[in-house]
Length: 396
Image 1 (cartoon, rainbow, N blue to C red):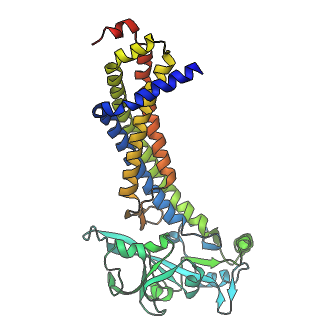
Image 2 (image 1 turned 120 degrees about the vertical axis):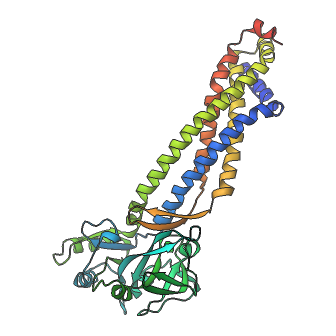
Image 3 (image 1 turned 90 degrees about the vertical axis):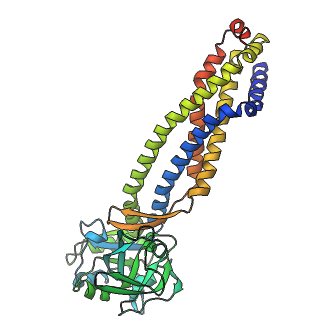
């Protein structure tokens, strides 16, 4: 108990005197805060991209592609195959027919608002009426729904903010094609909000696709009917298709990009962290040197080396916590919700999304700050604990 009281007393003394050494401590605090800002902001890109992709899918829907195709862009289905797919068991059926939408996927060359001279691949999806009904998260937030059989389109909320000529009343121009924008829709923040939607049959004629499609989206009777649907289709000799839950399809698409962003984020944070650790080491060595007589006096009064070691580490951890907290607040205020777009390398199309600074990322940033503080204070703490009492008392 005596040792614990000694440790607590010395730690409290060190922490109370931090304001007196704030100018020298600012080096470590600033360095650690900078690392946390970069670390959290980079990882928030991956979190936002993953949220946009994974929030797009539902286990109650299934996506059917040509066998061997990983994405809609590389898939192709003939009209007779689509007719067979729509007969499969497990699909929700109503008086108007099965909740199955044969869809096309094309690219529009549209410039971003931030870079109007540079075009970007914006995905355009041709859907059937059942495709609108199957996606229960989709709702029109401005304007109206497009009329099937026309070249009218609706635009995702994120795309309308990120790209030119995508607001209600605008006309999207892509090559010789003209697409009047009649509505803006939202889809729970999912990747669909980066797309332009129109009538599938109109797109077939415009892009000379004949009777071909690229995918069929179906709504299941219930989530446990998926296996029945998959087994019936994959064993049917009339079609050669692959079946995946929509949620799994988008999760697979987000995995590569998220992994890349996380790798870059951790690598940059590690390199910057080395610099921050050296800053903390220099700060704590300076603190130990300036308090050498004070430390020696405490040792002469009977305070043990463990108390001195713990007090220096506590100060270093406190600097790490201060820097980490500042960095976390700046990252949250400055980057959370920031909207941008990036290339989805699976489909070579743009995905508009918002940075997402989550509580998990903030906790990771704070932990990393404390780790830098701990490493930065370790060697100075050992030096302080081993400081010769007689020599230290003679220092000015």
